[in-house]
Image (cartoon, rainbow over all chains, first blue to last red; front, top):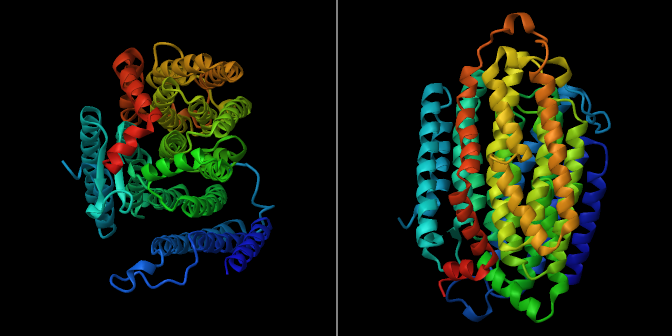
Length: 112
Length: 497
């Protein structure tokens, strides 16, 4: 199971890298989103995939699954949602202001 | 005062949430924001006092004992950085009220300003890696909003890049946290310090070096060290001067603080990482200052200078002796104060002359002498001329570097100092000397600038004070250096063994 997860994370990271390196604004944002999912999966996998009992007091106390990574991932997902929403709005405003979503046309340092 | 450590986070958070409901009441917002910053200043002053008198202050949230619960730690380093952050926040607020248009203040400016302070203070005070990530994000989201505030074309374009680069580095933060949790099974910094030390003794250093370098990538992106600084000059040029001062003074310094914390507390066994820090620090300061020499724009020179000054701090951490850490802190404090003062000057000059480009203005010294001379003091302080604060930080770093035998990087740092002086003098000579000339000359001949100077005065006063009365402050930094180079003090006070 761990091996499968690691392969999946690898595919996610490669897809995300490809998307982040493209010129289109929306694809870059999608790349960041996929990278965040890869990171969350990595957090889940590295802290141990385990078929234990749920972390409830009194239910087979010896074989608890570690609840901490799940709490961490929940927090990270919520933060990721917020940032994604903000990025989409910002990208839309940039598109409206500049009339393009191509990063080649958005570079340079002229002060306007 | 058992809950003292949480106050610098809690006060701005509560007031910030309350202010969302009072969007239309400008004066109420101003009063509440300023008074909450004053409360934070009071709390952090008390915190510094207790951290100095009684040792490290800790607070276990919800009373869960240390390695399991969330813990807040106020040691000398974090407490004094919180103090500096609240001073800077306060003067930035006053500067903002002089320069911002009214429209901006109706768009939740005060709430996001306070949330930024929450993030910054939280990153300084937390004793737990994942909470560091969370507070980093609180800080970053607020900074995303503040940096794109106003939505000019240039601003939108550059803040978009800033947002994407910082988000990608945050994802790498999660990846690094995942690795270190997988290897050690804990995220509490004191506990990590012990477990990482045990793993080094058992000979498992390879994976830890990798994790240390991934963390360096993350914090290096936030603090703009050598290969990762490319986003900074454009992004910090885009927002108005008040926001640029806040970002230039605080945000990169949070990155430097985390580098300091990680590599003095957790990864201090690994000589390889310290060598990387030294090399990267040297490259950062030299290439940064070269960029600044090449620019001909007031604000842009200052923005590029941030890179070079971060290089000094990274070099100090790379040297790693207690004297070097003390010098790094002194330089950090000096830089927070002087850098933001210089950005305020850039804003004031822009207000007077209508431009930030050096070739379009000259002779400001004749029309606005106070502005000119106060700028001169800050500029030579940044370059490190003796009676001012910049000198003592650099002096301690140079002495520490020579003692440790890193002659080449010290040579680079001295060369960088000379080039810094050159580029600051370039600003002074071209924009303040010579015939009076700037674009909207006729109507702004006597444009008053006095009110813009009021928030700058405390900062200039602090840089003179840190220079002239350096001894007590330096004794404080030396004690901090001792505290940071001996992780057992931190571990004992957190884990209460």
